[in-house]
Image 1: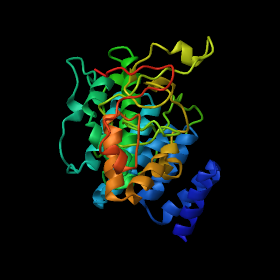
Image 2: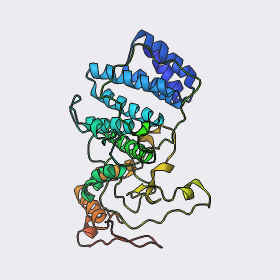
Image 3: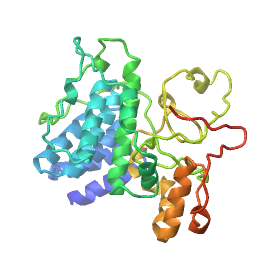
Image 4: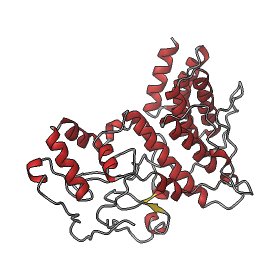
Length: 349
């Protein structure tokens, strides 16, 4: 009975019928506590802007998953926690939890003390920056190509890694805009909290939500033939041809934010302004349906060894501006970076 209630509730949440979905999941949880159901209810609370309840469910799911040694659910719970903390304006806490998510995905021991929460100055302000995170995630062009073509492990793990990176950048950019000494710069989280037996009371006054990022790929080189930015889980170190930003109307939000921090990307729209990325906080839950990488992964994985060699050689030598599947042509050719009309290639320092 509880499984049916939970299943129905989750389906309602997917269709935006949050109140009824929350009610059904709550009934299911009375019969049996399940981390997955708590995470789904946390998602619903997040979308109805009941952030304290969303955080409670995420942390309770984390506690249950930890006690049951269920690593995948621990990872998802830490990520859900990071998203909710970001919404609450607790940006330093959000980055710490997103970092713990990434570390779990990298195979770190669940109980490992990485000291992330101790990276504070003499005033207790968190000192990690978005630029540091972006720099730490640079990899070789060859690794970026392999990731774009579907290498690098479990696709769900790659999606979660990508999301953790995105939320780190978003949280740190927001934190850097808050005054020194503000609550958003303080670290108050512990790795595995012990939630109270009763959830916080629901309130009609809800926290003001911060802009939520759509899931964006880690910076990675891409071939010029792509029709949309591909999602990857690793950033690439080499920048292809310089990109020209799309024109914006004067007075628009984009124009006003032109001076905001941006980080390397191979997106056709140019460098990412993380402060303008806005969408449903939980669009990241279903990456596979809209992942443009799937097309290129299918080509690469289904190709014979010679075609794969041709793709790798043409992509790497051209800095992502050419992609050939013919080894007969590629083996004798020296590929050069070819910028689109109206652009010129520039070296990424």
